[in-house]
Length: 272
Image 1 (tube, rainbow, N blue to C red):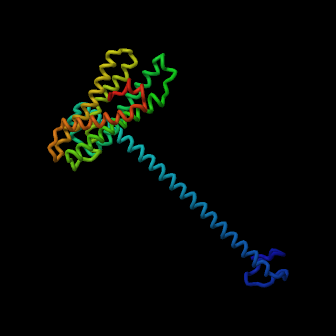
Image 2 (cartoon, helix red, strand yellow):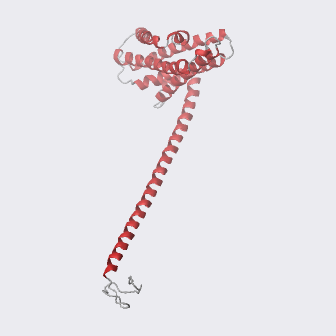
Image 3 (cartoon, rainbow, N blue to C red):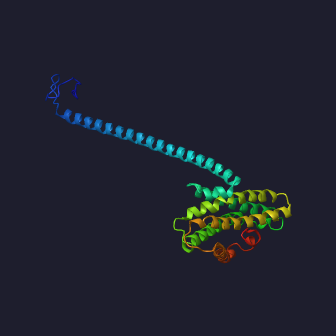
């Protein structure tokens, strides 16, 4: 401690400066204030350091989660490609296999089919000189895309309802139906890809043939999925009647929703 008047070094317990005789009582308050300030400054520095460490940990965690997501996405893409090749080579056998992750690939197949067909519809209408100025991306791509996905899931739901409640397949889940039904979309995707490419060639007859094959493929996928899942049922119910119930239900769905998309789907909906 130093004297405020002469800066002479004194002892803490001294009451007066031994050099100049100045009272040291005021110094105690100053020293306490300095000590308190130093403590506050130390606490603030520690808190700031803690904040930096915490932010660094959070950033590291976020980066780790992002890397895990990227790796998981890559793994799913690789697995889907293997699944696609296997189901293209033997669609019926691969659909019957029904591995745990197949329902995810079933959903992906349905989305890919909807994407290709909706995009074909949009680009073809864009190339039509008579209506190109009125072609809306939302009306001719976004809405058809989601409508086709919903249509496929409605068929899957109808298959599930018939199997579960009419034919009493107690062990079957909706994911099982999507896995079986969606796997059979692999061949349809290939035909739809060809349909997409041929739409740029103007080869109308081939385009119409492919459009018909897509329609037949969609119906066949529903029928085959129902027949192959029949082994899980407990009630003897003729599958012909089950198929009729499914398609009657789908016809009702289309009747209730077709006005939403009017003329465009009357021309381009593959379920018609």
